[in-house]
Image (cartoon, rainbow over all chains, first blue to last red; front, top):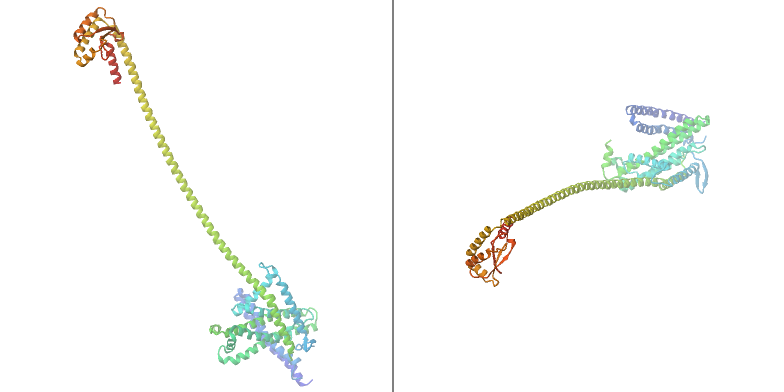
Length: 81
Length: 232
Length: 243
């Protein structure tokens, strides 16, 4: 195993690991804000939770991007040929 | 382990390779077409349960489109609704053992994204004319033209990668977990996959609708809609 | 990372076909059904509103008609009552008038009858009194009375106008001297006396008991009354005339 594939594997792991940090924090904030909003306005809970799910999915997309990059590195690394 | 990025070619018709995703898509199409044909067979003035259900689907779709665009839903209903229904059924087809959702393959998602791009052009030209469509790139001012052109590409690419990543990752994770512990353990992940599939289908449809309506509004010769857009 | 463009194209075509098919089979029919129901409901509501308005109008009309009928009925009742009152009063007045007339007629009749009765009574009384007088005078018949009558006759003859005297004399049969009883011996005296005052005429005597008492000269055209009977009939005539 040469260094390039080793670096690819390590970088893939790092990409997923660090790529998950940002969305995790963001989703935490989003959920906290949504909870706050629902506590203030329980009657708007439906709209808020629907918007929350959509927002979470959008945020999650960031982590998914990282996952895609990692998978690219692992399975379809253009440098490895 | 197979690469999630590659497709399995089952057979070839002439030069055309038929992948598993294409075959499953045909199956989904058949199910949807036959199902809707059966459901809409006897539409009465006084609805029974079946008709009430499908009317609920249509009414919900109309409401969503109206809330998103602020216009009448009739021109967009077929495209957006079919997009939503197809992605939803495709995402949930992973529940059937042995099937891989077509949306977990690059080709299907890329095709959907291309369709959205084409539909933006189509609806933009139809709603505002060719000049109006081209003018929509100059919103809010002329300096934004390169950025807008770039954005029109990147946003569909973003949709493509978002849908692909979400569905593929769900399938991939479930595959890994199932290879480690096949019994009962993947069930919560599958439930999450169901939710993700629904939310992604919804997001895809809503984003397509937003892009279309933004293009149509920006293309209108009347500056009032773009002014209104700036207010919030 | 490689993208199979054949697969991409196939999937795009697939989804486009699906869009077309579902648009034909699902979205448009269902939306059309919803629109049809809305239209039908709207039409129904409009029809119902129209029907409601019509019903309201009909109700108002009926109410109006009922009020009209009621007022008409009241008017008819009032008119009938007035008519009845008028008829009653007319009948009453008529009856009153008739009764008055009847009463008046009855009064008149009573008065007439009373008058007639009174007259009859008077006539009866007159007759009775005259009968009494005749009977009494018959008993009073005497030569003295005859003599008084004779002198009375002579006086009458003397006062007689010339025309009457001539009429008395010209009867070819002569003048009859009527007495109640046969004068007998007195005949010659009386003949002589009458001839003295009347002139030369043929005289013959007739007996008439109806005279009661008195002496009368009778010719074909003239009667010189001079007797109780003549007096009584004069009295009767006067009484009858007075009655």
